[in-house]
Amino acid sequence: MATNVRAVCGALKRFSRPHASNWVWKKKVFCCKMSTESPSLTHTITLPNKPNEPVHIVAAPGVSHSDFWNAVESSLLKQWLHNLQTDNGILADGTMTLRQVLVQGVDMFGKRIGFLKFKADIFDKETGKKIPGIVFARGPAVAVLILLESEGETYAVLTEQPRVPVGRIILELPAGMLDDNKGDFVGTAVREVEEEIGIKLNVEDMVDLTAFLDSTTGCRVFPSGGGCDEEISIFLYRGRVDKEIITQLEGKETGLREHGELIKVRVVPYKKLWHTTADCKVLVAVALLEMAMKEGLLPTLST
Image (cartoon, rainbow, N blue to C red; front, side, top):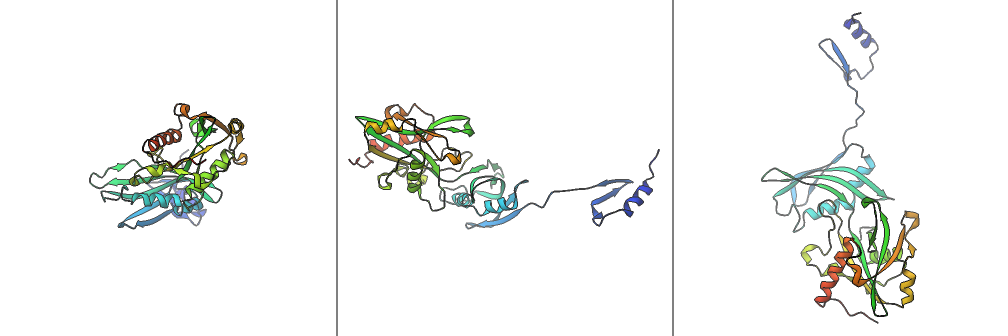
């Protein structure tokens, strides 16, 4: 039976709700536009060296109001923006411009941001082409190469723990992220060793191996600069111990169990270290140590 369009329209008018503007009519056909999407969260900033080039920070769908503003105010985003403008930063010579940052994900560690995922729209001004700009931000970190001499043999003290992102159990240097904005790299390194190895080191005995790099590098290493902003300071600790200490350390279970850290301590002869693990922190530490020793840069090991 044919439908009387006028009758239907009249019925709809009689029962229409206040927001009738959502209804669209055209050529005797009716449809309803319904949307549950809220307006995008946006914030516009200008960089100190680019006052005429506004940068729009936008929340991707699913990012909450609180997560968005935590991201905007985070040290992770602020440090990344700062890096862009340093002497060897992407925006330093004026040939490129940053137009937008799309905040895609935020992981909170308590009251602070642990991980931040965003997409940056950076364009080459001459060609108009956009350069790859997906960023996983986690900020600065530290790692410690611990070498213990005992009965004429030098041993490296490592941690063994499951690493979900690579799906493997990894043998690696004790390492950790900076928990604050104070930049206490040495103090963080000492704390990480105490948490992951169970021994307490003196700050004065730590040698910053990355400090031997040229100052233009920032004196830190980038393990995955194509996708992650992480920059690591690598420290060296050397000491002499009885063989009993080496035996006690091997296989020791440590870590913050309440935080899911399932760590075992492993002790490896230093001469075998370079081919024992694929951990890039270990390999970088070995390379820096060997070159520093070759150049005579290391202080004398105290007794």
